[in-house]
Length: 114
Image (cartoon, rainbow, N blue to C red; front, side, top):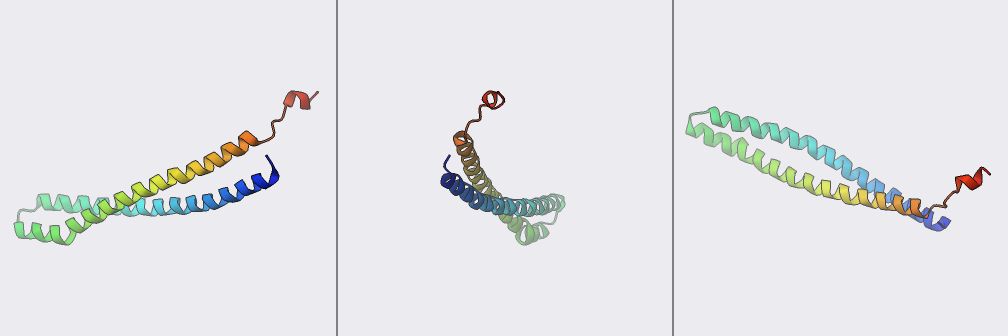
């Protein structure tokens, strides 16, 4: 592979890797937040199931359960999008590596050691 082409691909890979790193960082942060809301949602659901007073149940639903459920659903959708982005940008990195490997000069080890 010509030097200018290899250099260009390396630069592109660095750019894409930076984007991929940011996506991975966002993914990990959202994953943590999703876990928090999963617990909050689950706890409020259990409390509602254990409560007899309808007025208290409705207050809990309005104050906690519905907002937690909405935030949880929003985070689940966002993490799916981030996961898709991770896969796409990882494909870029893999394809660049494949092309560079395919185009790398082939070394004939048998000829080298004769």
